[in-house]
Length: 574
Image 1 (cartoon, rainbow, N blue to C red):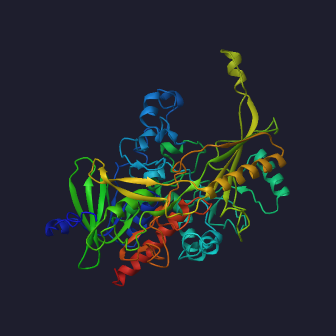
Image 2: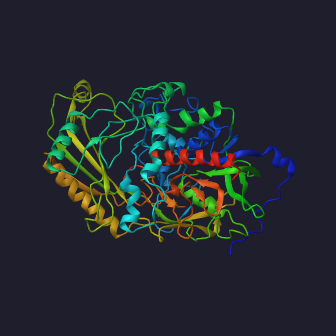
Image 3: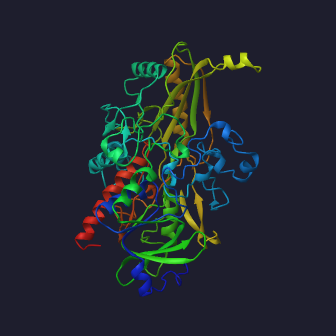
């Protein structure tokens, strides 16, 4: 049994008075930023805790306007860095221009019981500065899937419960897209869409002509194509299609906590932002039967402090949220806060990104495209949508794009410079986003003997692919090649990256929602079943992972839960 002797620190009245708030939010990324915004707007004095350093919009984007030649290695990471960071250097968004927003491998070690590449951003804004910004609503099929197909547990909510909250966050964040009228990809509150280029349009037409159940649509993303009044009030401007997003956007052209929700919360006068605050655990009050606050370790000085509040939102990102709850032990909860079911840290899932295809295409030589569009064409899942049809569960979303590189040239001098100004041939890139099935064996737990530099147990990650993932991958590679062949592509090359879980950066679960406290940790409002004033609304709360991108759903779930928390607080239930 874990040692619980030091988990209930003495509370001094002077400390409690100056360290007491209405609400505490742990983590300032996409979901934490939304929790802070909603709670502050409703009048709650809110403490927002971030384990990393402060990053202020505009002020702290040091590479945002640099040219390629301004970097010592032209953007590439040097060999010494790669050797020291074998996990981080696998991330697509890492470069000399963005490395200051990433956690280096040695800075927060964890134990890989199975290979898992954990990509983290510890700073105010978290990974909202680094995300790929693809935003789709989940469909009714995603929320109904587990109950229909008999895996995981039934979601305690349905699409209809979340639909108004999707609208709520879309209008504020700014999402570009088309009204496509697809049941598998619900429409939202959209800004004008980006436009497919000429080859992408040809592929769209040819694929849809050959398959009646496959719909190719323009991707939806959190970029301001035409800002509305609410975005201008946030101080944000139109996306410039620069494709330099991971540096932090000085235009506020894409949604991040730094450019949007946190400044909005600060304007209310109700927000206290505290960077460099590593949350050790949540403090449970045995007499009142609820959480009373959090224990925090200063990231720099290592000094321990306690903060107190009536409600606590845990939004530290999936794996760290699990870590905090597992480490929040007491006499009442010796195995982690709210963990009567013994399922805390279990049923972790993610997105399968292993499959890609590349191909050549005989496209028009006299056409090109403007800018660097921040989204790709996409095809919602067409496998096992309404019923079980394949020899694997669930399915995958497809993303693809067409582009032209420069003409291949050799030599130096004027002739070489002239040659590379010409556009080369058209090429296609296609990728899968596969749904993995939550399994009890895919789990997180705390190390019994290894701790980090703040004295907190290291996280043990045991998450693997299974036979279902392999079958799903095989189907995508076969179907993707067939679609490209029928669309007229040539030199089609399928590839299995064999990458470990984690590089999708879509880890979910461990603190899943459900109807029954015996088989889940959270209720339909994201409250811990057995500690109702603690809410979890980041990726950890997800019951299953869908085939769509998850970030928009994190935002909507958070806004919904925060508003419910305020209502319950006003009624005196929390």
